[in-house]
Length: 285
Image 1 (cartoon, rainbow, N blue to C red):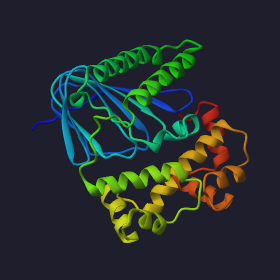
Image 2: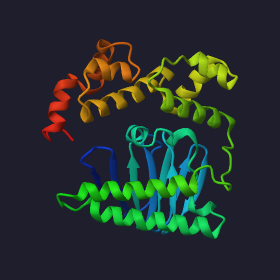
Image 3: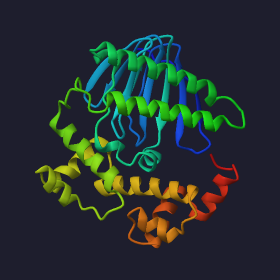
């Protein structure tokens, strides 16, 4: 099948915690399978797309909406003239605002909705997302106030109406379920001393099995994924608090300030102080 280039417009909020992306596909296009630590709301503004999450696929049509959890491998297959709107919300920001957000699953996929009440709640999510889009692109001096307001309305709807819903189907793949439980645990306990063996014992499998899951799904080791989460939290603290680097490092699970700085330099190719200076001055997005 011949594929076309996507037309995308992406904007990130001033606090760097939310990203809104509009995508239009003039022809057929298939995404590469990818993942991110943010949660994502995906809305089909026009046309038909197929969504793959791990080993399962579903077809989405105009006005359908779906929730994609943190660290889930997914890809989109676009048909001609299809348009999508995607909102990504930082898992790090979520942890600070709603510490127990990841304790239960959010289950939302328009084609699977069975009740009138859930349909009404999903449609309200869509309306709120479109209102968010309008203010996201505005240049008003108080636009961030409006953005935060709509984000909280979206989260309230998700938590109140789609968290641990009765119609939620359990994950079909036992390997997927184990990985999902592991990711959830890391999000909730990244600041603690964590050993892969302890998680393996909790799940009743071997450490080698957990290691294989991370390699197969994310092409990285368990330790690399844990370090990624810790670094994201440390960067957030660095930009949004006045805490010392030592306190930030220890609060986010690093063994020392030196370990944090070394990890930071490998990722960003600069010292934390230089990175913070560039971000706050607007020289780095």
